[in-house]
Length: 220
Image (cartoon, rainbow, N blue to C red; front, side):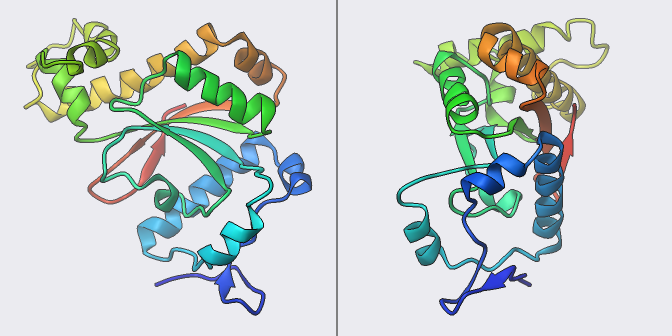
């Protein structure tokens, strides 16, 4: 089932956000909009959008609501998960959804330059990168990549159960810890974003995507 938001003679579509509309948003309102969009996704009620019309309207400018850092996993369609369209959000993707200088620079561009009101670090269940970090996989450049996720594993050294990728509870805890660690890295390694958050201009939050039902649970 789909849910139209408006019609303008060119088919059902959601309008591309304007500068004034972006300015009027608060970080809390953006979180609310993402929650509402995810509820529609879970219910199978995605908004019908005329992408051709949206592309034309977004050619000369963009005023997204948020930037989402997600895993590269093909089973996590970020825009659909939050029922967002063209021009609605920046999406950065890297296996294991961790930050580095390039991602931080992209976040600073999204928020400080382009006016986005929210940074969301989105982890997900059944993440292959998380499982690889847990098991200590070594293979080409994957080895270096997984080293960025290993701190989340190491911080759970006192976990009482089996510390392997076959233990779904442990994988879940590492996935959640990886999200919270990267939220802290954003604050520690980007004075620009840390100040914007302190001033209330943006929010920096984390969430987990459940592949079994499509639901997003915010962790901060």
